[in-house]
Length: 166
Image (cartoon, rainbow, N blue to C red):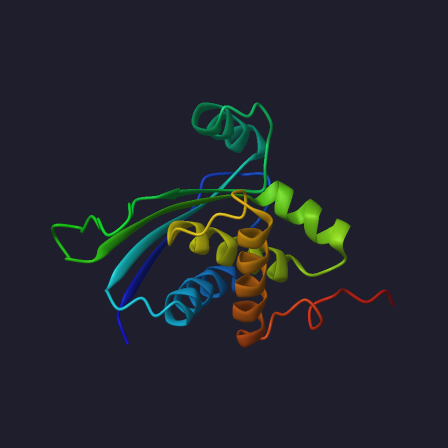
């Protein structure tokens, strides 16, 4: 199995990152690459930011002046894969997650924060590999099915991670 380096950075101070989230992110990244048959050693960066920071990034890179849950910055273009000159690993790109929005969405959807962060990570990894749900309804359905398939393999499927009221 190819090697994967995942760099997780916390660039926000409002919300404490729960124990186990870094491992979850690594597992999600690896699961996407395995599912997609990615054969190269690879690197990916995942950063947690505030709503304010993700809004700035969204405005600067997508011309959308609003906060969002996650942004993906792929470095692969078609068959062109940039490699880290020191390691030889393929640079997949960067994932930026608003932890503030992830907490809110987990609550709104009635599932765990782990499920939400897992979903956002898998979603972004698919973007880094070239998938785009905004091109057509078919592409959206293909991407959603891939997301749920990966999450199910990891044991964090939609059905298994809803928060129950006690």
